[in-house]
Length: 173
Image 1 (tube, rainbow, N blue to C red):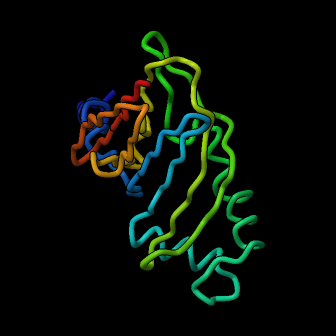
Image 2 (image 1 turned 180 degrees about the vertical axis):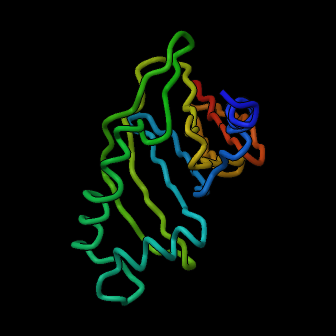
């Protein structure tokens, strides 16, 4: 094996992680309730423009029921394979999310927004962790986007870097 080839293999294996970074940025909103957790995703401007172009088939800058159904089937539901970029944590183990309810999509200020819900877990304290382990999607949860009201107490923690984003909503009731 030549020295150049060996150097190239070592270089790419060491530094390949440096090239990984998010291509899609999603602002997350979380509303814990007694019977469900409502979650909204607002896609970044570029991703929104591409998805709206694909799914607003009649080009009226609004999504009708058939367009929303197509988005849910074609774009949203397949993300269940990736646990919708979130996991529930009960203090001992992470639990993947594969079931969502009440999906809706809208266009708000030129951004595509998905709103859906998941069942509230039975444990009194939990974390809802948002991340993409492959670093392709940045899920961003800011403190003001965690809308918490009694009987819940909530807190946001996050890690935000140029190449990796991970946030969690800590909820107790």
